[in-house]
Image 1 (cartoon, rainbow, N blue to C red):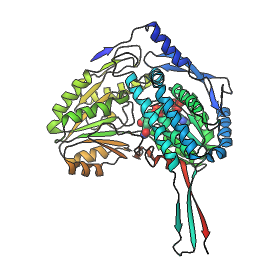
Image 2: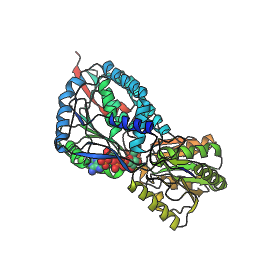
Image 3: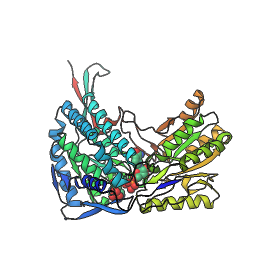
Image 4: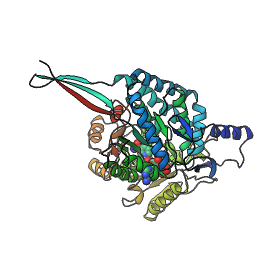
Length: 500
Ligand code: NAP
């Protein structure tokens, strides 16, 4: 493995540019169209995970700010719902264009606060922007219906109405795209909103909020609360009676807690939760495609993705060659600070995230797994971990039963289809599975039997704003993106009238 450890001091122009993009992020909470400090005056630090150092501070919202944001979202709701769909669509379209215009600065900002390499951050900006383009097109395609009652006496008019003010809670791993995937349909549907970004990555969301304001989003439609005390901000909003819906992306554990809190006001709820994706390579697979797919499914975002391949089941006939080729590709990756040229793999998000990977690898190796490459920390000031491939991982290894959230690929073998499907489905999660085979019938047969919301067939990345993203079982409720994405933010109302 090659490790690009970053120099202690950056070249002056680069350092200046990094400071510039961080300093340009708006200061404060966005409430009712104003940027203002937290009511308490408190702030909290945002860290660069590649150096373990503070980048800057942001406002630390509490319950008082949450109530102010709820009042602002409620006050803006009726007027916003009454705007022309075309106007809402055009705001999103302008925001899409601004995101692409500012792609370089946004990518650098994301890399600084989250760690992913610049090339991946640029990809995320483009992916995030696509949600705005998609939902700018959906805003004008909200449809209803007209129906004759079965006895012929009445007519039913079916209309779609915005749900009302919504609360959007996002994770740190895709700081921009997980925001636009929720804000896009909320804007298109005519909902006002409060966004609570993750504590580790608030800067990308604040920069996005500024762009939406510049694109013409009226005051009060979008409110942003950065906080280091998520429970104090989120719980009063869920229980308060103003918010009508929660859309959450994050861990299953927190999703479950918020689902419980949402029960009191019987809120609409969309949850995009954790995954434990199986990656199946059949004996008839094209191994070039399978290795390429594994690299994408495992290494996107340093393995810190809900869609990350978490368990690789490879047919015994090809397992040796697959493992060898995957290990060679992983060993050739360059680990380092995401802003450095040529870096493929950035740091993990924090010491806890890396500590969890340490524990899982030690556990698997202790139970007899063999390290083909990697297996420990990579050098550098930040939370670096070596790209790792393990073979012969026993079924009771802890990493097969929870999200690894790191650059570690455990390989297991199978000999028949039923065994592979049973192993793949033996989890509480059901977000995505990956399947590599050149046999069409097997591809369909296994796709029907894999118990996940999405299947990547000979493909290591399934995310696309035009497709319905989401999971089954404890991976979530509802879908984001695609034709159904906007439905999550709409209610159905019907009007009954007699027709004499
Ligand atoms: P997390 O710990 O569940 O946090 C997600 C969000 O919830 C953050 O904004 C967090 O704020 C907030 N939160 C934490 N505790 C809370 C509480 N008691 N009350 C209210 N809000 C609370 O997840 P994460 O570590 O940020 O993200 C990684 C997880 O997200 C993984 O499980 C991953 O699989 C999942 N994910 C799923 C998808 C999908 O589409 N299915 C996509 C991306 C990620 P703080 O940052 O302040 O803790």
